[in-house]
Structure formats: structure tokens, C-alpha cells
Image 1 (cartoon, one colour):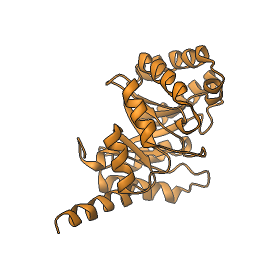
Image 2 (cartoon, rainbow, N blue to C red; image 1 turned 135 degrees about the vertical axis):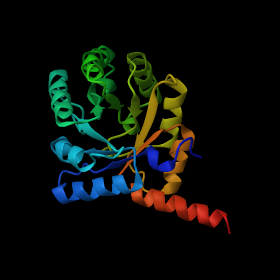
Image 3 (cartoon, rainbow, N blue to C red; image 1 turned 45 degrees about the horizontal axis):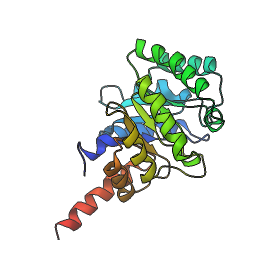
Image 4 (tube, helix red, strand yellow; image 1 turned 180 degrees about the horizontal axis):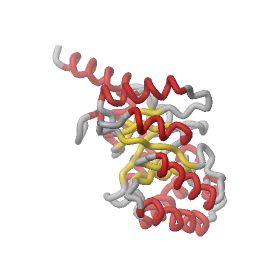
Length: 228
């Protein structure tokens, strides 16, 4: 299944509004223990997470204009700059979903064209979240075209806050219409190894979830079963 070790697909995530400092400590300790790709935390916890994963290969990701993407481009840029100052390695930026649903593609293109140089100037990675569960196939394909041309690092399926999260169908559609240089992050409702496996098989190279430990444990159980 994996082109790389399973743990390296996982962005170990906590984004609930009731998140505690203790939760960030646990998240980061688990991420270091299992050598996950990254932790994804709310912006106000970026600095702490960066301190907690120091000395490991775990990157720190945070979200921008989360979860609805309504913020003005200028506000998103301010959030991005502050997150990078605090030590964020990867920025998961929510696209303006309302603009997408209204077919305002010039606004979508203008936003990403303003954001990209700022992130690239600091050598950081950008993931754009488009909330695929509430979009039509045509809207997803148009997003793939715009963000593919912009040269983002990842297109991400979901925030986890819409009525529908990641799906194999959306990941497959992403992969079909994105340049190979743009990776895919599947997130939203991925809670077990079997679901993660399906997303990776469809083309995802990152899995955003709070169930990273359960996924790794499930993979080990599946491996054991296959040997008996």
C-alpha cells in the first residue's frame, strides 16, 4: 500500500475549539513517538508545538481562516505571517468556499496569487483546503486547475467541519486533475487504518486525523492477521 512508511503519511491533528495545553503536549509526544509527518494545531498553539517537537523530524502545521475560509485575503496573510513567526512549517489555508460556490474564480485565483509569494519567501509549505464534500465535481476540477497552476504543495479535501469529509472519490478526482507535483491531503472523518489505506491507494500522500495512533495500531493488527 505505502510508497513510504505509513507513519509518514500522518498529520497528527487536534483543532477542536476546546483544545487544552495538555492536549498539545499529548499530541506532540505521540507524534514524536510514532515519528509522524507533522502535528497540526490551532494557531495559538504553534509556538508551544514547535518547542515540544524540537529535535525531532516532526513538522508543525497550522490552519488559516479555519474552518470556513471567509476571511479577507489580507487577514489570511496576517495569520500566515504570524504563524510563520511562531514557527509553523506548513500552512493549511482554507479557501473561500463561498467564492467557489458562487463561481468567483477570479477571487480564488487572486487570493492564492497573493498568498504564494509570502509563503515561498520563507520556504514553507502550503496546503489549500477546499471542502470537497460540499462541492460539485466541476467545482473541484476548477480548483485543481487554479491551484495546480499556482504550484501549491498540497490540495486538502476537508476541514472536518462540513457535513461530509474526505472521500475516496474526491481524492481520486484530485489525483486525476492535479499536476503530479501537487500532493493530496485527505482529512475529515478518517478514524481507522482501513479508511486511511483507501485514501492512500486513491492517491493521498498525507492523512490529516486525530486518530493517528489508532491507524498505526490498526495497520500492525492487519499485518499480524495477514501472517496467520
